[in-house]
Length: 205
Image (tube, rainbow, N blue to C red; front, side, top):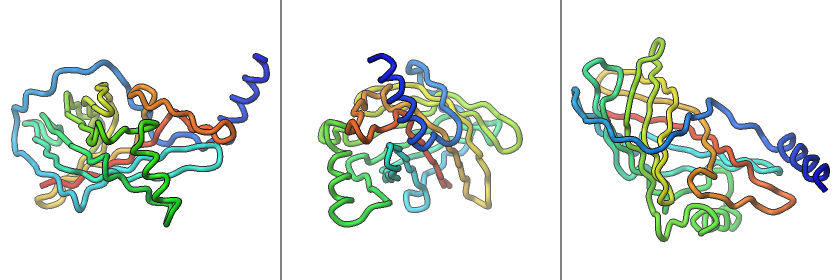
């Protein structure tokens, strides 16, 4: 039986698309940044997007999470950030790669207890706890991600640039959904990968 389970696991990982980007470093929740610094930027909900990509044996799905509100505060040593908070409207998530009844069915399942349980936890929050300059336009951003009632600190690289009066942050990384209590594994013949790709494109001014 043990060898059978190992074989199934190998088949699952060989057939399921690999996660993209950098693995976010995860740690216990930390105290939010103090906020001392420079200009406060307001996020543009229409120009910004947060997309999660979940993979399974038969393929993958892209899920967009609307930004409910958000702000970033530039540090005195910009382009780092001294503080910031982004609130995602998980209850109004949208599956981008399906249409009709398939789209509706998957969206309802994602809102259910198997995944985000949006009736109880309609939002997710990312709150900055630290920022370090990397090379070029890259920063290393740390923040508490609260989702489904669980808060973990994650650390990932992002490219943060200025164009006129607008600032743009882009990042691609992945997290393990199990750490936030999203444990649904999928059907036996169509298992879901634990690692979820996150793609951020944030515009603020």
